[in-house]
Amino acid sequence: MKVSNKLKIFNDPIYGFIRIPNTLIFDLIAHPYFQRLRRISQMGLSYLVYPGAHHTRFHHALGSMYLMQQAIQVLRFKAVEITDEEEQGLLCAILLHDIGHGPFSHAMENSIVEGVHHEHISLLFMEELNKRFNGSLTVAIEIFQGRHPKKFLNQLVSSQLDMDRMDYLKRDSFYTGVAEGNINSERLLTMLTVVDGSLMVEEKGTYSVEKFLMARRFMYWQVYLHKTGIVAEQLLIRILKRAKELLKLGVEIKCSEALLFFMTNKIGKENFKTSVLDEFSQLDDVDILSAIKLWQTNDDFVLSKLCQMVINRRLLKIKLKNKPIEDAVILKHFNRIKSEYNLSDVEVDYFVFSGKIENRAYHTEKQNINILRKNGKVIDVAKASDHLNLKALSKTVTKYYMCFPKDSV
Image 1: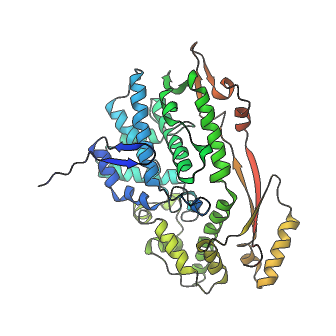
Image 2: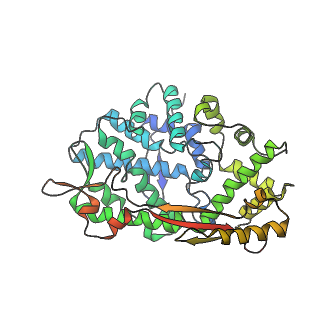
Image 3: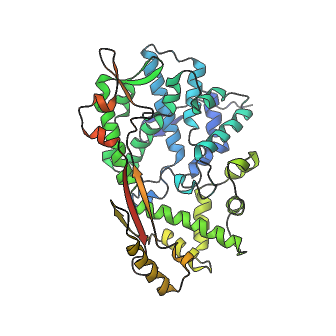
């Protein structure tokens, strides 16, 4: 019998060759649960703004694992003890940290299921894989949940300076072409150290952390919270909402079996069982896009128009303000669309609506990024920095938006 070589490499456009360190990692990557991430976009509908943003959660998971390999190497060189078992746990935890994402990532988080965040679904996937791999993921699950006694292990997977953020900023910057988001991940990794069991950055890495936080702020305003991306995401949410409403009214809606299951069943934390997990594992971007293409010609005016807007990129107009939008302004557009198309109030709500977005690049009171000074003193990066902007980055900035049809629906 031919024995396959499982110590393969991936050629990544960001880091070059990414090595698969062992057979467990190979088998996890080869598993259908993980292969599904090839069909989940990393940035939802951001490709409607940045045409190059077609990379997937699969890319990101491998990139995060690569950075974790580098971080482990750096910390071991600095005499930080990381056992082989802990190394395995770190690599598995970061590889699988996003495995619970649904179609189009964050856009569908509360549309497919109700009140179940992707982190919870990731944990369910990991627990199921742990059964299938004879308990090999026990340490990984402990780290993923932030329960490992060695605090720095948890911080490498989830903190304000973790491998997840380091990869997605660099990767998303590369694929969107937004140079302001590019970070020097190699420099950041080289400056990592551990003191009293906590992860921190050596003093000479202060400016690299500043650049990292500034890059995060730029990427949120320019990419993740780009107004066109917000409109597209809101339309996607409303498409599913309308389709669910029509199904409740007895209207036949054609789509894949996996999508239909979540459209016709109310799934929350309390009933997200193994059988539901198997259904969820069959769901990806393809189900949503094929459904939207089908629904373009649906007899329902609202559903068909919303779908046409997304497919043809004829989106709603969006206005972004620093203050809440006045009710009178919203009402003006509401009444115009209502009379022009003879729609009910419920139907107009799909085309005229408002909301808000928030951006906070750094949380000073939550999982701080600490700097280790040469004299041994530990200080928060916001205080260590001579850059006044870092204190401003720790404040939440809120913007308000209103969406409405430009001229006609």
